Length: 165
Image 1 (cartoon, rainbow, N blue to C red):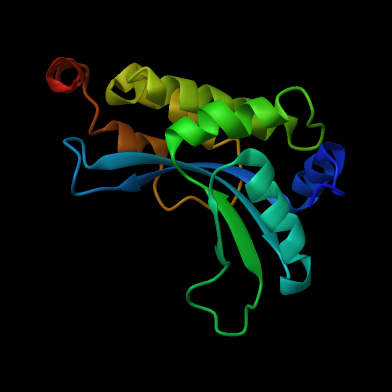
Image 2 (tube, rainbow, N blue to C red):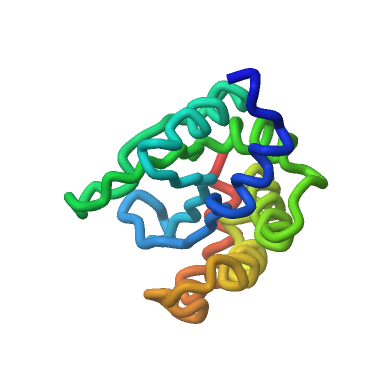
Protein backbone atom coordinates (compact mmCIF):
# COMPACT_ATOMS: atom_id res chain seq x y z
CA UNK A 1 0.00 0.00 0.00
CA UNK A 2 2.84 2.41 0.74
CA UNK A 3 4.11 2.00 -2.82
CA UNK A 4 1.14 3.94 -4.21
CA UNK A 5 1.82 7.67 -4.01
CA UNK A 6 -0.67 10.36 -3.06
CA UNK A 7 -0.18 11.87 -6.52
CA UNK A 8 -1.23 8.55 -8.09
CA UNK A 9 -4.33 8.46 -5.88
CA UNK A 10 -5.26 12.02 -6.86
CA UNK A 11 -4.86 11.14 -10.55
CA UNK A 12 -6.90 7.99 -10.05
CA UNK A 13 -9.73 10.04 -8.50
CA UNK A 14 -9.54 12.49 -11.41
CA UNK A 15 -10.47 9.61 -13.71
CA UNK A 16 -12.60 7.30 -11.59
CA UNK A 17 -13.94 9.41 -8.72
CA UNK A 18 -16.85 11.69 -8.06
CA UNK A 19 -17.87 14.32 -5.53
CA UNK A 20 -21.66 14.10 -5.40
CA UNK A 21 -24.33 16.41 -3.99
CA UNK A 22 -28.04 15.83 -4.36
CA UNK A 23 -31.31 16.80 -2.75
CA UNK A 24 -33.73 13.92 -2.27
CA UNK A 25 -37.21 13.46 -0.81
CA UNK A 26 -37.21 12.57 2.88
CA UNK A 27 -40.03 11.67 5.24
CA UNK A 28 -37.71 12.37 8.17
CA UNK A 29 -37.27 16.12 7.62
CA UNK A 30 -39.68 18.99 8.21
CA UNK A 31 -39.33 20.26 4.66
CA UNK A 32 -39.58 16.83 3.07
CA UNK A 33 -36.14 17.21 1.45
CA UNK A 34 -32.66 16.14 2.48
CA UNK A 35 -29.23 17.14 1.20
CA UNK A 36 -27.04 14.13 0.49
CA UNK A 37 -23.34 14.19 -0.30
CA UNK A 38 -20.65 11.61 -0.78
CA UNK A 39 -17.26 10.94 -2.28
CA UNK A 40 -17.02 7.79 -4.40
CA UNK A 41 -14.37 6.04 -6.46
CA UNK A 42 -15.24 3.00 -8.60
CA UNK A 43 -12.92 0.33 -9.95
CA UNK A 44 -12.99 -3.21 -11.28
CA UNK A 45 -12.11 -5.95 -8.76
CA UNK A 46 -8.53 -6.15 -10.08
CA UNK A 47 -7.96 -2.60 -8.85
CA UNK A 48 -9.23 -3.22 -5.32
CA UNK A 49 -5.74 -2.52 -3.96
CA UNK A 50 -6.09 1.11 -5.06
CA UNK A 51 -9.46 1.45 -3.30
CA UNK A 52 -8.04 -0.18 -0.17
CA UNK A 53 -5.02 2.14 -0.29
CA UNK A 54 -7.27 5.17 -0.60
CA UNK A 55 -9.35 3.97 2.35
CA UNK A 56 -6.21 3.36 4.41
CA UNK A 57 -4.61 6.69 3.43
CA UNK A 58 -7.73 8.72 4.22
CA UNK A 59 -8.58 6.68 7.32
CA UNK A 60 -12.32 6.63 6.67
CA UNK A 61 -15.04 5.23 4.43
CA UNK A 62 -15.69 1.71 3.17
CA UNK A 63 -15.30 -0.48 0.09
CA UNK A 64 -18.46 -2.16 -1.24
CA UNK A 65 -20.01 -3.60 -4.37
CA UNK A 66 -20.61 -0.71 -6.76
CA UNK A 67 -24.11 -1.80 -7.76
CA UNK A 68 -26.69 -3.40 -5.52
CA UNK A 69 -29.14 -3.97 -8.38
CA UNK A 70 -27.06 -5.08 -11.38
CA UNK A 71 -25.78 -8.66 -10.88
CA UNK A 72 -23.53 -8.24 -13.92
CA UNK A 73 -21.68 -5.30 -12.39
CA UNK A 74 -18.72 -6.76 -10.51
CA UNK A 75 -17.03 -3.40 -9.91
CA UNK A 76 -16.27 -2.09 -6.44
CA UNK A 77 -16.60 1.35 -4.93
CA UNK A 78 -14.83 3.20 -2.15
CA UNK A 79 -17.35 5.54 -0.49
CA UNK A 80 -17.22 8.24 2.19
CA UNK A 81 -20.58 9.68 3.30
CA UNK A 82 -20.21 11.06 6.80
CA UNK A 83 -19.76 14.81 7.05
CA UNK A 84 -16.91 14.86 9.62
CA UNK A 85 -14.78 12.50 7.51
CA UNK A 86 -15.53 14.45 4.35
CA UNK A 87 -14.61 17.77 5.98
CA UNK A 88 -11.63 16.60 8.04
CA UNK A 89 -10.05 13.94 5.81
CA UNK A 90 -11.28 13.85 2.21
CA UNK A 91 -11.41 17.58 1.47
CA UNK A 92 -7.99 18.38 2.98
CA UNK A 93 -6.41 15.47 1.06
CA UNK A 94 -7.61 16.81 -2.31
CA UNK A 95 -7.42 20.56 -1.58
CA UNK A 96 -5.45 22.32 -4.34
CA UNK A 97 -4.54 19.05 -6.09
CA UNK A 98 -7.35 18.46 -8.57
CA UNK A 99 -7.52 19.78 -12.09
CA UNK A 100 -10.24 17.89 -14.00
CA UNK A 101 -12.64 17.68 -11.06
CA UNK A 102 -11.67 20.98 -9.43
CA UNK A 103 -15.00 22.76 -10.06
CA UNK A 104 -17.03 19.82 -8.74
CA UNK A 105 -14.70 19.57 -5.75
CA UNK A 106 -15.00 23.29 -4.98
CA UNK A 107 -18.81 23.09 -5.17
CA UNK A 108 -18.79 19.96 -3.00
CA UNK A 109 -16.59 21.67 -0.41
CA UNK A 110 -18.89 24.69 -0.31
CA UNK A 111 -21.98 22.50 0.17
CA UNK A 112 -20.34 20.68 3.08
CA UNK A 113 -19.56 24.08 4.64
CA UNK A 114 -23.19 25.18 4.23
CA UNK A 115 -24.52 21.95 5.76
CA UNK A 116 -22.03 22.13 8.64
CA UNK A 117 -23.24 25.65 9.39
CA UNK A 118 -26.91 24.60 9.24
CA UNK A 119 -27.58 26.84 6.25
CA UNK A 120 -29.38 24.03 4.41
CA UNK A 121 -32.42 24.65 6.64
CA UNK A 122 -33.08 28.06 5.12
CA UNK A 123 -34.55 29.00 1.76
CA UNK A 124 -31.46 31.05 0.90
CA UNK A 125 -29.05 28.30 1.89
CA UNK A 126 -30.96 25.61 0.04
CA UNK A 127 -31.08 27.79 -3.06
CA UNK A 128 -27.28 28.10 -3.02
CA UNK A 129 -26.90 24.35 -2.44
CA UNK A 130 -29.26 23.56 -5.33
CA UNK A 131 -27.45 25.97 -7.64
CA UNK A 132 -24.14 24.29 -6.78
CA UNK A 133 -25.50 20.73 -6.95
CA UNK A 134 -27.16 21.28 -10.31
CA UNK A 135 -23.85 22.38 -11.85
CA UNK A 136 -22.20 19.13 -10.70
CA UNK A 137 -22.63 15.61 -12.00
CA UNK A 138 -24.87 16.96 -14.71
CA UNK A 139 -27.07 13.90 -15.16
CA UNK A 140 -30.80 14.33 -15.44
CA UNK A 141 -32.43 15.52 -12.20
CA UNK A 142 -35.70 14.01 -11.01
CA UNK A 143 -36.87 17.21 -9.31
CA UNK A 144 -36.54 20.81 -10.40
CA UNK A 145 -35.03 23.39 -8.09
CA UNK A 146 -38.38 25.18 -8.00
CA UNK A 147 -40.23 22.08 -6.75
CA UNK A 148 -37.73 21.63 -3.93
CA UNK A 149 -37.64 25.29 -2.97
CA UNK A 150 -41.44 25.38 -2.62
CA UNK A 151 -40.97 23.58 0.71
CA UNK A 152 -38.64 26.34 1.90
CA UNK A 153 -40.74 29.43 2.31
CA UNK A 154 -38.99 32.24 4.14
CA UNK A 155 -41.40 31.87 7.05
CA UNK A 156 -40.94 28.10 7.44
CA UNK A 157 -37.16 28.54 7.15
CA UNK A 158 -37.21 30.76 10.22
CA UNK A 159 -39.23 28.17 12.15
CA UNK A 160 -36.95 25.32 11.07
CA UNK A 161 -33.81 27.30 11.95
CA UNK A 162 -35.17 28.22 15.39
CA UNK A 163 -36.15 24.64 16.28
CA UNK A 164 -32.95 23.01 15.02
CA UNK A 165 -30.16 22.50 17.56
